[in-house]
Length: 320
Image 1: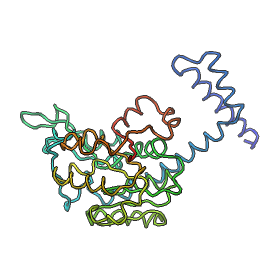
Image 2: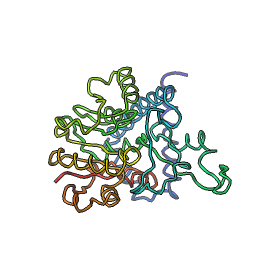
Image 3: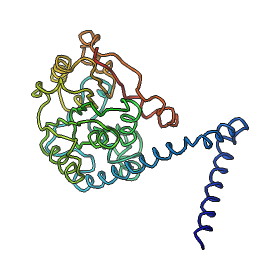
Image 4: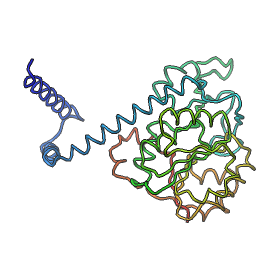
């Protein structure tokens, strides 16, 4: 087959796929919708959209590669023996029965992986404890790859070139890797108390040559008062409730309130309102943070409704 024939064959295949898409999408498209599609093609806007899609695919491949590396070294639940996981006594997860709570790292396992690798563990019988009746509580201490994309491509500003990002309790480094590939943040820091987890992150960062922008600090965040006020964006993902008693959580929240600078962006999972009410400190913190809209709303509109629902527990605030 000549190059000309190959090219014609490829074009015809693309045309067929476009026609199938327009024909089958929710019962087909009307003339007005077809016209809008034609204008999009004629304007050549699809070129930039295609570039974004290709870049997204490249990032996903890089993150998939990191996941494969981590799966070789981490236990299936991504919890190390040196960690002390405790059941929350307050907050949205206080109803978790630790005996029937499955810790599954969302960065390492997507929904299909969960069904494939943990099917026998996601249900149990309340009477005899066989794994076939009631849903098991599933908890993740990292963000999924789709949530990382939403965080950096929808929630946070497009241009982070002069901004410093901090992930408190960075664990296996999921947020750090997401920030590196999905954003142009000037510097990305993770603070993690567990030395083994710090070593895991450092190995991944060095192997993938990300040490030009990512730094990991092995320490308690309470000891970092001299740098905490230098950060522009702080990520807090379920960072305290499964690792600290309520009184210790309050100490850290007060530390953050006293040290994070004005106009710093704070991303939390779950909402601070839920957390502060459960810790009985809502009045003390009620005037500290302001809930704000996402910065790149137009990217969020591209998400399917059912996919966007996965991000309902992610909140963006600014320090007043």
